[in-house]
Structures are given as C-alpha cells and as structure tokens.
Length: 617
Image: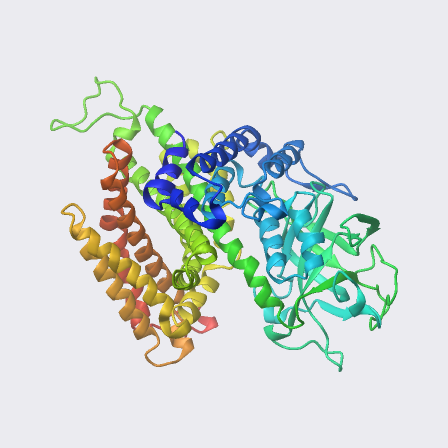
C-alpha cells in the first residue's frame, strides 16, 4: 500500500497546492516539479530509510570515549537527504534553495518520517537555520545557517536543563562577556557559557563537519546573579568546533562535552544527549578567557543572537516549527502502523463468519479484515492518521499563506497558525499513538513481538506526547494564551473557517447531519471557553486545560474531515473516496461525541484534580 495517492489527494484535490505556482515566489514551479520532488523523497525514503528502520532500533548509538558511533546506514541516509536539497527546499535560489512551497516540503518530509523517524531527517537542523535566517546577523546567517542548509553542518536546540526540565524560567546556564572586546567579534558579541543541557537530540555525532548548538542562557547582572524569569534569557550560537568568518573549521574544539547518552524506549537511532558547556574538558584559549569566571574552566565560546534578554522569543521561531514537525512525525508513525496492520489483516486467516445458525467449523477460515471489530480498529486508524496528515498539511499551507499571501490573508494565516499549532503538535501525538496501539491489537499476540514492526512504531511514537512540550504545556498554551490573544481574533478566524465548511456541507444530503454536529460542537467549545474564564481566575480556568485541548482538537479534526469529505465527493468516485467518506462518518459517529465529557469538567471549572492534597494519593 502506497502513501502517495493519499498525499496527492490532500495536496491537489483538497488544498489546491498546484495553484501556489501562480504566486511570484513559486512561478518557476508547477504540479510537475512538485511531483518530481515527491518522487525523489519517496525514492530516498524507500531505499535509504525504510530498510534500516529496525537496524537503527537495535544498534543504538554508543560512545567509545571519543566519538558517538552510529550505523553506516544513518550516515548514508543523512548524506542522501542532504544531497536531495530538502534541507534548503524552501530557501531562495540565491541561497542555494529551491523556493519550494512549505506545503510541498512538508509533504515530501512525510515520506521520511514514515520510513524511519528514528534515523531522522532535517527537522531540527532546518529549524535551527531558519531561526538564524530570521534573527541572526548577516554573517551568522552566512557562516552558520547556509552551511546547515547545505548539509555541512547540522543543528540542535538546547533548552532543557536537568534541574529545570520544561520550566525555562529556571534556566541556570550562565553566559558572561569574553573579555573587554567581546562585542567586536565579527560573528557576534562573544560570550563564555557554562552549564548543562539535557534531552538534546542529535547533540553529538559524526554525521556532519560541525554541530551548531542554539543555547538558551542567562547573562548575569552587575551583582553576578542571574535575572529571574524568562525575560532574562538570551540566545547563543555555540558551535561544536570553532569556525572563521568564512565558515571554515579552525581546528579548535569548543568546550562542549558529551556527559552521557539517554537510552530511550523509541527513536533509538537518534542520539539524545546530556551536554556540558564550559566544564573545561576542551578549554579554549584566546583573548578575554576567564573574564568573570571562577577559574573552574573558561567556558564554551558562544555568539549572541539578536539582543540580550530576547532569547526565548527567538527560540519560539524554532520551537513552533518543531511542534508542527513533531506532529508530522507522530502522524506518519501512526500511518506506518496503519499500513502494516491493514496488510496483516488482509492476509491473516482466523475465525469464521457469524451466521443465523452460529459459526460453521466446517467452513474455511476468513481473513481477519472480514470481522467487524477489526474493521473498526482499521477505520479508527485511518480516521486518526489521514485526518492528522490533512491537519499538518493544512498548517503547512497556512505557512505559505503567511509568507506569500496578500496582507489580510497573511494575517489571517498567522492567527490561525497561532491557535492551531498546539493542536497540530498534541492531537497526532495522542491519537496517532492510539492508532499504533490499535495496530498492535490487530496483530494480536504477534503485535507485541519484535517479529513485526508495529511494536517499534508504538515505542517511537510514545515520545511525541513529550517532545517539544507535554500535553499539559500545550493545553495551557491553548486555553491560557492562544484562544485569548488579540481579543480572541485567532479563535474567531478559526470559527469562521469552520462555519464556511458547515454552510457548504449542509447543502449536501450525505453530509448535512455531520455539518449540524460540527456546528453544535463549535458552539460547545465556544461556551466552554467562556465558562472556563468566567471567574477570571487562571488556576480555575486552566485546571482542566488538557480536556479542553482534547475537545478542541477533536472539533478541529471533525472540521478537517468534513472539509476533506466535501473534496472527496467532488472527486471521481472510487474505493479511495469511499474510504475517506467512511472515515469522516466514523469520526462523527464514534469520536466527536466524546467532547461532551471533556468540556463538562472545563465548563464547571471542576477542581477535583487540582485541589486534591498530596497525602490523598
């Protein structure tokens, strides 16, 4: 079973991505060039990624005392990905890019995520370079971002610390000016950093010539103390190996040391590290070394990005990209499990059909796909995974609208992205994980053995509910900030898009009931949003932020499916469109009714969980 027909339908029949070539930025492109890119991605994913997905799961990265060792297949996959041009797909021609729409780039990357998310592609590296293109100095863009887009360098994001986790206000990594002339370095104001960063994906490896770490740290005040809260956080470029102004390696290793590898239940092919900055393992000599430090090590050399104290705002540029990337990874892991369990169900004989006289043991066995409950599990997976893919591509289309649309349309896209980003990250990471669980269930006992791939897909996907912000963080972001920002304009824009779909669908007899159900769900979400904030007390409003986000997400996916169903009705009638209409029907019959229970506790500002004393546990 191929992913390509689904991608093509969503891109062209639903989103109309081919019309993007009418815009000046994409004028050199056409559906034919888009399809050539997808062909290339599909081929590399098939040849360089999929055959080695189990290999990188069993041969985890290990440290030999000097280097992190990865299978040769990982290096081959990285090189093939870099050579394809996908790292710079959306960049200007002048920068060596293809000026592709992000919608097409996201669709192309879906093939890699499905083939082996554990090997990884360029999500963090591209996000790292995109941040520098937006907020770095011209020389920082030239030296660090462009070399990352070419594949010479790779990039990380260094936020969490062992003692702080997701609480970034408690970041304790220090950055002090590197001598009196620290501001004169052409690569940016030069600082020395000391601290520890945890959970750094791709933090140490030999896949590229250099690794560009983007590190959040605080600059001490005149009293030597770190400023409290997130407003004191700054952002620094800390390369693994120091470079000159031409981007050439100087031969000097920066004081960034691997303190350990984290051994995860999934994504085992990607190194996940604890990094020590400035511990003195690789002391860097130079002007100003040791200024303001305590003599335990001069510190890792870092270059300030933008202005001091604005680092978290800059980092959100990368974090928001990464959240959509995590959503796509979760989606495609779910899709991989769906395809595997569908193939298994079509070929596994077991049981006999139920008839009026009961089961006839003399009759031959039937394939398990003929059993109603197996069909339920397969249809649930299809509804979760294809719906999530539609959502991720819709968000990618909003990125293109924000960057190339007319001013009013661009602002609408910005607002919609603000509201949808927590959903694009959280919903697939929960429900495509559930799809992976159902894929194991379809396989029965074989599903939890390593003889079949579905148990690995589940393990890989379990990380995505935590990657780039847990459900609790995303829920508070949605209910505590996104639906309220700019007096609720983002929520109003989203409701407007939903109403437009409802008005179209209500004219179609086969979809009218779904349209009415979505209208009621939208009304429920709106009422719950107001009820949550009725007292104006954040502790009460946010006590059930996750159930709110779950209901919000299900409402968004119901809208997406209804809109996809409208496109499916207009396409040529075939089995694929019948399947999409059935998935839409499944979502409205089995899934959307769940929002009532979620929204009840939100509307009542139920404090059962929040007020339970610790001793009661």
